[in-house]
Image (cartoon, rainbow, N blue to C red; front, side, top):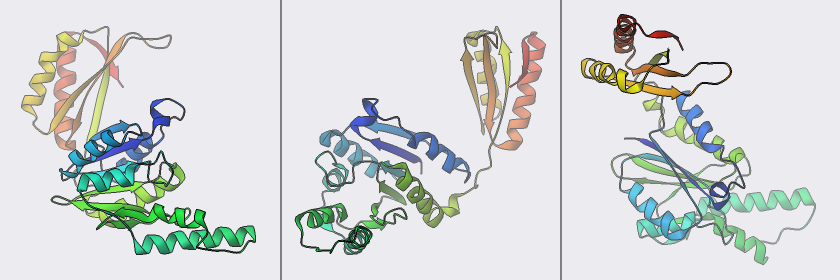
Length: 266
């Protein structure tokens, strides 16, 4: 089981809006001892969204999808999820209730009478049309819910609005309510050094040997061209099981010292 993130919206790909979901998702997962395994950005293209969801529904992954669940012409995610699952869109009774509560709240705040049968209010109910069999995802910000779909062997997709003020609390609720049993199950640590004026190709055999020797550790190498504050260097490190990280890091620094490399803690 992996954890994935889908971010939908032409405004992201065009640069009209900067994506904030990716770093926040990484932060929310890390606080719970989890990590993001993959992420995808999609524009408002029905065929591409449908094809992507069809592929991800076939997995056992936990997937968070942000954007496109409104009821305007450029919102396609609900329809694409239904098409990918080959299910009809139906008005979810709990979603209908929550949307009506929100509309009533808005009417009270504005001091105007509330008429459910007004065309704009009937149209708002479309935000509660989800693929048949979906569950609602509570929205503490304005009550208008997202939805979730379970699939495969423990997999689930959570569909949330593109607005961070709504999506992030919904993501936290989903994690804490349904996936707390996964928190901090695999302790991980990371240690690294900065190796100055070194060539990655010369360090690669050592990196490969460490991964062979310590099978729960991954080696990483992040080159930096240097700037006004720092010379050209490579951040070289190991991450994974804490006990093996300590052993692998000791092995790495000993080898760097033997080779006469110029390095210091990152």
